[in-house]
Amino acid sequence: MSGIVTSNVFRSSGVIAATAAGINFESTVTTGTTLSVEAGNGYFIDTTSNICTVTLPGSAEAGDQIVLVDYARTWGTNKIVIDSNGLNYQGQDDTFVVEYNTSGVTVNIVYSGASKGWTPISDDVVTDAPVAPRTQKGIFGFGSAGGKLGVTNLMNSSGVIAADTSAVGTARNALAATNYGGDKAIFAYGNDGSISNTSNLVNSSGVVASDTSGVGTTRTDLAAAGYGGDKALFAYGAAPSSSVTNVSNLVSSSGVVSADVTGVGTARRYLAAAGYGVGLAIFGYGRTAGGTTEHLSMTNLVNSSGVIGSDVTGVGTARNALAAVSYGEDKALFGFGNGGPGSTAEVSMTNLVSNVGVVGTDVTGVGTARKGLAAASYGGDKGAFSYGDDGGGVTNIKNLVSNSGVVASNVTGAGGTARVYTAGAGYSYSA
Image (cartoon, rainbow, N blue to C red; front, side):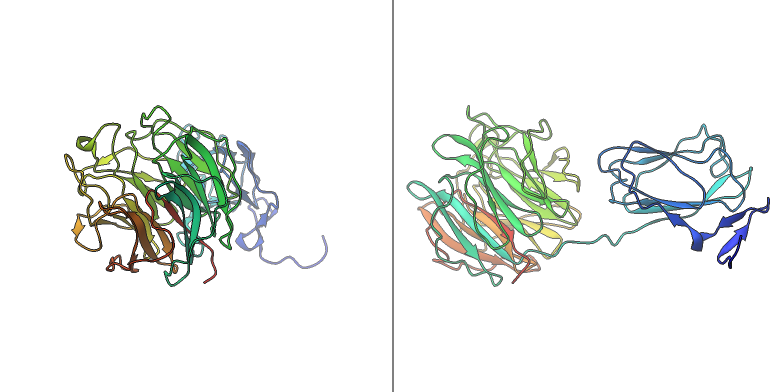
């Protein structure tokens, strides 16, 4: 050997071993179900698609070191399992199960000798995950006003809704919309004269694309929300037979709608959804297939992988045909709708959702009571409710929501054609 050796130590056998400063990270990201590792190396492990079993060396000397990194922050969804390959791990033999199932972890282990074997010198969670910029503008689209509409209305970063943009895509109502891909939006499903699974992508400039058809169960009266920072989810609604469903469809970060996922939560229609926390979402309220006695006070939380949780019941007045929007960067708000059990009255009522998904009690009396409205985020941390039916007919009333969740009084005549059963979403990182 020639040259200078630095940042290294001698093993007890006299062989030079890498220290922490000398760890060699493998350039290839591991995505497979198994990985055999060597001392002195670091490994990036991506468990997006599967659990990974990591097999440690069958022999080791004191001072041997290995680093394992949660490359895609997915170990909380698909864990890693460590096979200590005949050696001890933290004093336990290799019949004990060793696994790491927290997203964002870096595991740094060193071999301490035969007694304790491999010992973590750090297994820290990186809690400050990157968070996508918040959308600055909003878009409302489609709906009905004596007939089905295909118009859209852009909302700027100050919450001002523009005049109608003429129809692109099939006119329909009772659809849903949400943000995806960080700075884009998607409208999907609804009633165009028959029950539809048509979708229309919206680019980061607010331009609506032509129809894409044919993915997932055709349905109406559903809801949608973003999750995971750049993906989205459509869920629930009424199928062509008017039977309610709990079908959901994931939307990729490039706007591709996936096939049906079935069976989580009470099947229902006329509900609402919004994002909250970091990469999380919440669906809430609605009604089952029957009439006014079947209004619901019920929510379902969605994790950062798009998995819908079981029903949480009994918070706030049961109602349907409401809307929901994110605010304050990590919270959400359900608002308005059609009254409680046995009632057909429109309500002026909101419920705040905390950054851990807890729904607050009713806040009443701000803005005109109405149903069949929509909501969209704007300005990075604010939102707007707009449109709907106030019991006397369709409106284009707007109520802005501050970054602390306060709903403002009515702005009337705001933004194009008055209508009902429309949809809204945020888009664009640019103000």
